[in-house]
Length: 512
Image (cartoon, rainbow, N blue to C red; front, side):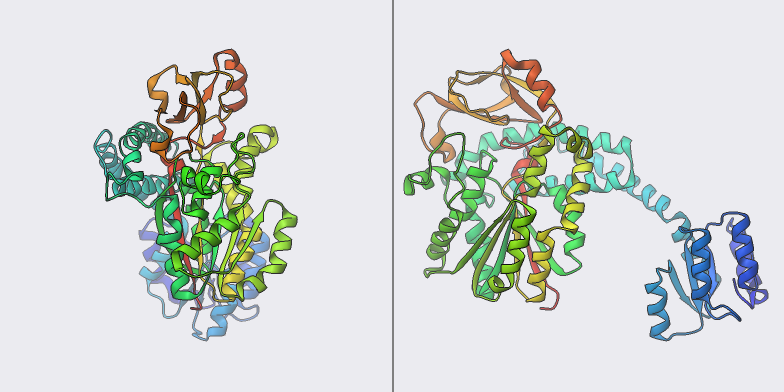
């Protein structure tokens, strides 16, 4: 649409040589008639035409076709014109004089950009997949595992967005095979990491305070610590672009301690202690009865931990958010928290409640049927959550944020039969009990010496089973009941990469 469209013959011919069909219109009324007769791929709209201006015509175009891309072409370089176009959600903006190749570039991006990006993504993944597949069964160091697991999580998100089911299936097959390699890696190295047998070990849950929190506190004097219970790497990947609109992000990774369950892993974050050390130091706080109440003293543990790290008392404000009412209450107090030096520690339980709740609620199960749906539901929650409100408050007050999780989860499909006595704990990805044993040896990592894994001693016959792969434990007597109830559940406590390898991100407000 251009009142001087006859001067654009060379542009039209060039586009037609590239395979496009072009309809010219010298005024808005003629153009609107054309749009009412048939659909078009893109509109090039002159902003300064006699009669109705470009932005007025844009509204009429949108009334006819609400999704057609519209490119504004103008002689004006005034910032106000650009802002008006952006505010009206114009698809693109070109300033005259415009050469044919500029128009070709914009039109190609708008009409074929998704297909071109999808083709490029497919080529890139196919090439990279061969390289990743060659690493199956090879001996990888912990840093290589972190890089591999993080990359696979990113590919999982990208392929889901591109709707490439064939490539997604290839990725899932690769992830399945790597889970067994990862379980063997942990079985070989984990106990040595805990007892100094290997100097080069990954940061663990117990190191979060010393390696990540204390340095920020020393440098800035105050910090917002956020722990999102049960957040997977792929879930963080979809939240990161939203967070990046307000913060500069530095993402590192650490390994959860075992079992990858809240009473063990999150207590280790706040205390800097392995469960055995915590039980010895505070036996009154460690009453093992199906893990109930073991996270009731996180504020005290963090205060004690920071005092030891910094050799002085550090103020700690601690809030745990379970419900919407908890979130509203937190947001009223948060400005006062962030105005003070020290640590404001927030624990958000929504993602953990979501992963557990979908098992018991058929409607929620349908909404979060697979990993892709779980990611999207997590993103939708985050955009309207008290967590995002809290992060924006930290941005407004120029307070750095350390955001992490205590463990991930895995989508479980494979039942694994275990034989146990009545004393066995009820968990589906890890079990304590006397004389426990899996039906198949590759279904679980068997721990016979709890102290080697930093766990409080139980009876001399007590073993720990940690599920591998995507397995969940079932008993022979309740096989069908457990299969029907828990197949497809998101669970944690075992030794998969999704549960163990975790993100920890330093968020620096842009205004800093």
